[in-house]
Image (cartoon, rainbow, N blue to C red):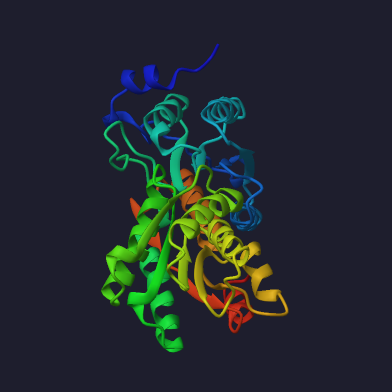
Length: 331
């Protein structure tokens, strides 16, 4: 039978979302925790799973890793976890608006629920109450992006009034919107004119989608000779850099800063000559994978609920410091 998210979400109120069924396991070997991610091929989620595996080995519980790129896959995964008698699940959902349905189904199965990275929302778009969350202050991370760009352009002696600003936009995802909004606000605070901000909506939040979006922006605003660019992650930012390169705009006329410190960023840093991809805000997948798993384990075995909200921060990495910064985080 197909699972109907909306029907179930309406049937169970937010007051009974999660945690009402005690799921204690005296023996660590009996503890089973699901870790569901929306993009299993993404290096960020691979690192999260790797660090979650470390927690599982340390505490001797079973970690069940499942790829859930769609709402239907999430429903199937929750059914599977219930059948395996898992006591907890950590999820980065493919759509945060699935929150009420996910929480209701977890509640019905007696599975404790945490979200990671993207915070689940209720029917009004507000953060889903009763579900502990570890995420990133998307707006603050975005501010770090904008500040890094402002600092580098100042070092180069650029006049902010003469710089075009490409905002690779994927506003349907709240996290992406908050990140790019934070970057814009930091740039405006540093003296960049709001009129220079060019929204470049992408159809897909990846390098190709950003490449196409940036191409349109560059075509329409050829009056700018110097550019800065950013998106919701490294992939989208690199897409803007590739589009600029196709028009002869290289590292001397482009400052782009991504988010995640992922492999695509490291590939840019490893090139013999610098590209327009100046830096990335390195996030900490260890905390998101290892610590969430430990928190869930303690919740199951000790009835010690995780903090309702934990927001992590990032570190700027460039060609000059990426090896040291990554080593400090065990990456």
